[in-house]
Image 1 (cartoon, rainbow, N blue to C red):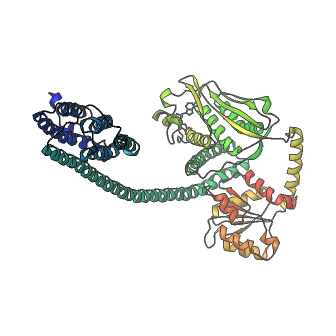
Image 2: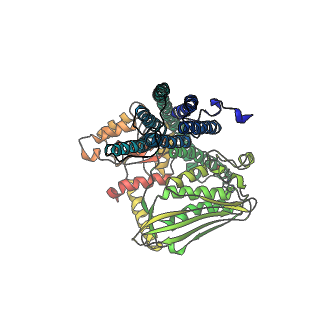
Image 3: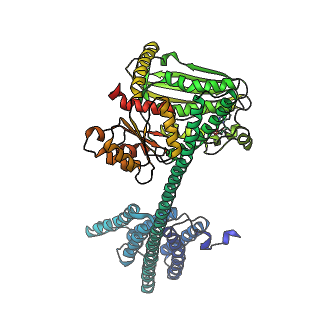
Length: 602
Ligand code: ADP
């Protein structure tokens, strides 16, 4: 039954473009039109007893019927157009040279049909080809006739005037049909393009608004995080600081144990706050990797020293195996970020291992004179990770299962941070894990190598000891001004400095600090950033404008509870020399103070 289904809707579909649909329609209705015209011609010439024309029109009718059937079976308009144009060319050739042996209006109509049809259906190149192909026989015939060279024994069949008039008329109808059909399709196409571009423009506006909104909300989010971090870090600073101070005052054993727990929990909370902040910083692309000189072996010892104690407390064996080829190398890189990666991996390894060992292996896998490639591997004999979770554990806030959260705690941010830190440097993390047997996390990192040799440990110790002694002497006479509004922090600072036999001067806000600086002489200022009346940035700007160069150039260290984003840039551009993020370790603060005043006093 389907064989006799000639409906055009069977072959039109929404996937076709407007022009392709027009091409299929043109073929479909064109075939019907031509079939009727050929039928009339066939009847007319048959009745006039013209055998050649009857045969030609008959054959053409069959061809048209066949192609029509093919079109309704499969809308292969490209193939069908080529076949039709080839047929048209043959008809043209035989009309000029055999059937009519003349270039008359019918021939010109056939050529126009071929030209119009070929360009519309097949485009410029094929249009040119078929047009020229059909002009050639006409030209050739005209030249031959002109030279009296043309002769064949066959006499052209003469059709009556009525047939010629109807034929000419039918051809014109066909030309008009093709033109009107395509003109409509082009118009429709242009309108659609216009509509699409208007829709596109409307969509673009929507997108821009959405992006603006997203950017705003991400800004609000980071501002919120910054504020929260400040709010959380300030009391945490007091808790950790006070705990440190209490522990320095030789407490009773039971008090000492309680203080240890207090310190551990506060540090844990701090680690979580830091993780959230860090992840936020990485996600917003505000992270810049440093390229500073360091010794990989020293760094690894520093990281693993603390981890080793943690592992041993759990009864685990902690192995650190460093390739001897790395011992004497000074390399360039970002030690802070590398520490963060190794620290996270080893912390996880210790956390998720109940019995057995944690092994950190660092191997130099390639040494090309001025660059080395190092493989870092952290392997444990812990609970392992299921194969299907090997990817998801790197997603932020994702842990392997609910049981993990309940049993081990954590935020699920550690590995997300590690992965992003590696990815930002174009590196990849590899994980191999078997449930109940253990896991191995590894990655390769490239470092440029410095030509400088490593100082021998003994020599280093002596230098450090000499410097420490000299600095300790110089420190007690240090004149410190602290601008800080929070009374708990003020108390904490006073107690802290008393350990170094320093009595700092306190200014309760930025304005007071500027006033005190006008009549007092100091060696260094510790400047809180968020203060009432005048903040730390403005106070620094005022101090840097003072006429006395000794005052204007005084070293200033910013104290900030928000370790977010471009704080370093902000601090530097306000004219401060350095910053410490609260809560800080006393030694870190002292190191920074010594760095800044050391050159002056020691
Ligand atoms: P957290 O340690 O805070 O849970 P991470 O992002 O560091 O977050 O780790 C995500 C999850 O990956 C962990 O909760 C744990 O399920 C799994 N995981 C990470 N390291 C190990 C390991 N060494 N052994 C087993 N599971 C691990």
